[in-house]
Length: 188
Ligand SMILES: CC(C)(COP(=O)(O)OP(=O)(O)OC[C@H]1O[C@@H](n2cnc3c(N)ncnc32)[C@H](O)[C@@H]1OP(=O)(O)O)[C@@H](O)C(=O)NCCC(=O)NCCS
Image (cartoon, rainbow, N blue to C red; front, top):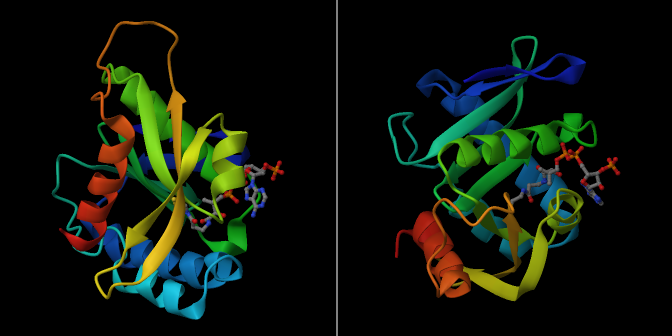
C-alpha cells in the first residue's frame, strides 16, 4: 500500500525501521495532547501500556500505517479486523487533516478486506476527531492499566458500508471492544 494524499502526505505500510519514530510520536502525543483530558497518573498509565510497545513490524494480524511528509513520519495508525487500535499524530502536525487521512486509509483497507464496521475505544481527547469522521458514540468505558489505573475512554463505532454483505462483528460487540483493547494494552 502506498497512497499519495493531498498536501504531499504519503501513507504507507510501516516498516520495522519506523519503530522508534512511531514510539516517539505516540509518547509525545500522549504527553502533549492527552494531558489536557487526563490526570498525570492516567497519562503515566497510558505511557506505561502504550499500544505497539512490542511491535516488531512482523505481526501480520495488525496493519500499521505511517503518514509521511517528505521523509518525515508525522503520524501513524493501526487496526486489526474490526478494531481501530491507534491513530496518533505528531503534536507539531495536528489539525492538518493527517489523522483523518490515516483513519481513511485504515477504513479503505478494512473495506478491501470485506470488513464493513470498525470500532474504537476513543480517548476523550480524540472523541471530536472520531465524531468528525462519522463514528458514533456508544457510551463511556475505561481501560484498566497494568498498574491498576482507570483510564476513561469512549466506545465508538462506524459502519463503513451500507451493504449487508461482508463480515459482521460479533453480537456482544461492545463488550468485546473493551476486552480486546485491554488485551492489546496490558495483555490480560
Ligand atoms: C486525535 C488525533 C489523532 C487527531 O489528529 P489530527 O491530524 O489533528 O486530526 P485532523 O486534523 O484530521 O482533524 C480532523 C477533525 O477532527 C476534529 N478534531 C481533531 N482534533 C481535535 C481537537 N483537539 N479538538 C476538537 N476537534 C478536533 C476537528 O473536527 C478536525 O477538523 P478541523 O481541524 O477542520 O476542525 C491527534 O490529535 C492525536 O494524536 N491525539 C492524541 C492521541 C490520541 O488520543 N489518539 C487516539 C487514541 S484512541
